[in-house]
Structure formats: structure tokens, C-alpha cells
Length: 241
Image (tube, rainbow, N blue to C red; front, side, top):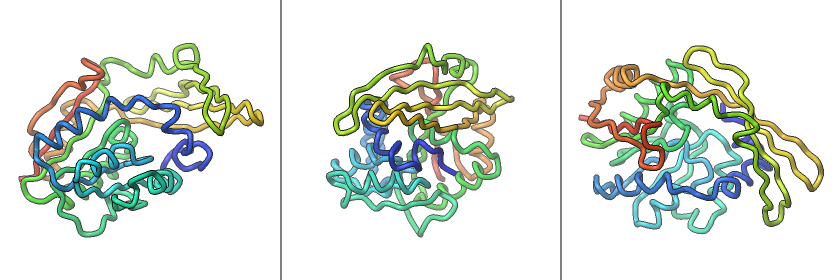
């Protein structure tokens, strides 16, 4: 199940405007070039920012996301007809043989159930050609990123075209073992609406990630640092033999 911030059409339409700096995607573009990927499955594509950047470079792209509202935003963007969009997840993909599968931002951590996570990795494995790669990022649990998910640390006000002023912030709801639940708040000045979206992320240790990848048939090739968040995230590059 996708969170309300991706499934509610009013919130999905805000996503890009509230997070306009996507420099975090540049290392993934460089990696696609490094691997000479000609076809990419962007899993958890959301509003399609990364999928469209890949397509602009002549790469054959399939964007997959469970949130229909986000996929609708992606499909309507300039260049959207150059990407194959699928509303769903990696457990029910059509036949694919791609060079690279990507899971950027919170996608990997948002798959919290261990059985669903393993099924996702196996679905990705099946979608990759032999010799293909999977790359995804996940926060280092030791950095305890959730401790800064407070109103004081995250509150901001944005004036958005055709929308008006939108106030937003995060509030931490629960930390139980590796699971962290938080709430995103959005207040619209135009009509006073206060919409919320609850999210849960799973913070996996390095050894757990390596074991899960092996169980799904991958070789863990490399663990990199996230250039835009040094020391705070793992970027894992796995290979399908």
C-alpha cells in the first residue's frame, strides 16, 4: 500500500513542487552510464522524475509504482509518452529483461514486510537480464535520522503556482525496532485543509541487506556512500549472475 502523499491526487500533485532539488538522482544517472544500461526498470518511480531523466538520455524505461495518482502525474509530464508506466509493484511484473533496476529515495525502506521485501527482490531478479544490476539506497540505522523528523526541524512554507501557500512538516509517531513511523502534514492556505500522510520505513542493517540479496540470488558487488548524504546512507549495487 502506498502512502496518502502518493495516492491522494491533491498531495501527489504537490510532490515535485515541495521537493524541487533532485540532485540526489545525479549519481544514479552516472551509474546508468557507467554500466552502459540501455534499459532500466525504475521501481517506485513516483511522479516519474528519474524515469524521465533516463528517457531523455535515450534509455528504454519502465516506471512502476503502486500509487495511481503519482503515475498519473508522471504520465502527464512532457516526455511522459516515452516511458512505459505500470501501476503495481515488482511482485506482478510483465515479462521484462532490463539491464538495470533502480530504487531511489525511500523506496526500498518503504517495503517493510520481510516477506514482501524478499518477493520484491526476487521479482527484480526475474526482471533483470543475466549480468544486469540492481541499485538502491537505504539509510544507515546508526545515524538515527528519525530523531530530526520533528516540526521544529522540518517546518516550511512554500508558495506554489496555482495552489497558493502550503505549510508542511513532519512528526514522529513511533519507533519500534527497525520500524519508524512518521506523519507528514500539509496545510493549504487557500481553503484551510489540513491533510496528513502516515509512512513507515524499515531501517535495515548492512548484514541483513547482504543476506536478503543473497537469498534472492544476487551477488552484492559494492556498497557506496550517498554523495549528497555522506555517511548517512548505504547505496548498494547488486549483480545478477
